Amino acid sequence: MGVDCGVLFGFRNPPFKKRPWADLYRDELDLVVESEKLGYGHTWLTEHHFAADGYSPSLMAIAAAVAARTGKIRIGTFVVLLPLHDPITVAEDAATVDIISNGRFDLGVGQGYVPYEFDPRGIRHHQRARRMEEGLHVLRGLLGGEKLSFHGEHNHLEAIRIQPPPVQRELPIWVGARADKAIDRAARLGFHFASVGVGHHRGKYLAALKRHGRDPADFKIVQLVTCYCAETRAKAWDDIADGFHHVLKYYHDWAVASGDITGDIEGLAVPTPERFRKQQSGEFFGEPALVGTPDEVRAGLQDYLERSPSSHLALYMSIPGNDRENTRRSMELFARHVMPELR
Image 1: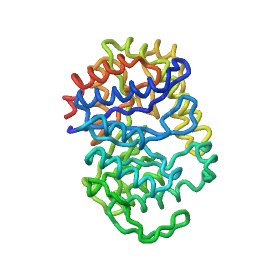
Image 2: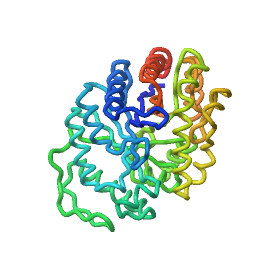
Image 3: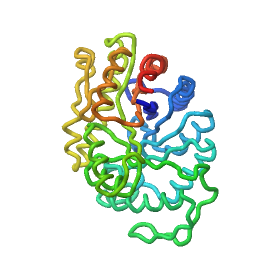
């Protein structure tokens, strides 16, 4: 299969197990270092703003910390919410992280959807698609070493070149998308695809690549999958039930607040932690959460990848509120018993 497996980290501090922030960040960064030792190919970082649990708002700072503490693993963002940021600053930060990491950075960006992340910045929620497209043009030009001139509705640059440039001559840029128009944009502009939820998004992306005259063989897909291993299925669900409920509740409420992604709401049922422990199953954005023994997780992943092949997996394994040792053990079990079957 040749699948690159990486662990996604959100640096979240839920109220049912609140910890000092410095302790949480230390432990998450330690787990990143451990994932490199275990042979994972990527660390994926994820962004939101103003969440009560501190969902990581400053990805480039965290990416730089990861770069300084590691030497081999690639570092990716899944995703920077591009319309919330000045694309020149994003390009400069991405280049800086790429330099610190000596060419190990992947920049993933998305347009966002939660209204209250836009409002305090004076950015209109309905402008996000246009800001996203303009921002992608700016990123591609600046990270590609161009002296860029660009004049759009929201961005005006005249003969700008960022210094210092990234180490990678073609720094990988991934676009996260779920809506049809956003998926089409990623393909039309020629970016790799960061996918969340149901596998048919992949099919839409591949079809759009062909429609726009692009060869799908030139592009990669990273799929976010909830994945957690323990010695027994019961222990696995006991470890993460509270945190998984917390995660689903946030995404459900954000989808409701957005008001324009009803399909996501339908795929985000929010069972109680007690129900998770009893039924020992759950879903995330319409796909089964792969939670159980390594054998069960391996079988679930192999089935998923047969239905929806992906070049990369971003494994949502560091579930909020779980003990660090439990997460470390899950990463170890996956690396030992599942990852070799995916290579």
